[in-house]
Image 1 (cartoon, rainbow, N blue to C red):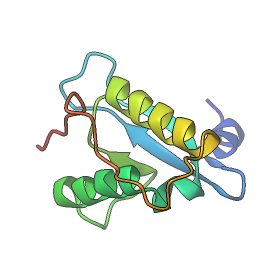
Image 2: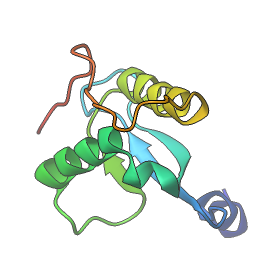
Image 3: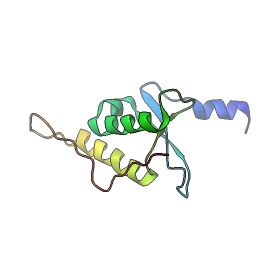
Image 4: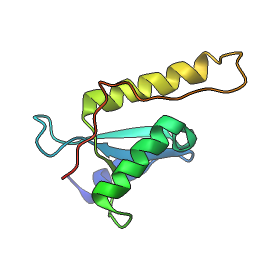
Length: 106
């Protein structure tokens, strides 16, 4: 791959963030996703960021690494999208990760 193609892949639109999702022992390895920065403020994603800090620390190079399986990340993304498109009329929300969503550490 030429340097120009690599540069294009690494560039992310303003307001978006590249994340690297996957587990070391997972068959598919890591996958790259581009998510809206607004996810960083969502309670479910904040919990995932805390776990990423525990596993990888703050000083990593490249995209933000997320320590969960790709399937779990896709489910989490679906939950966040569902909540953002179907706002509840309640004044406060309780955000709980589904019991099936698991985090792994090294």
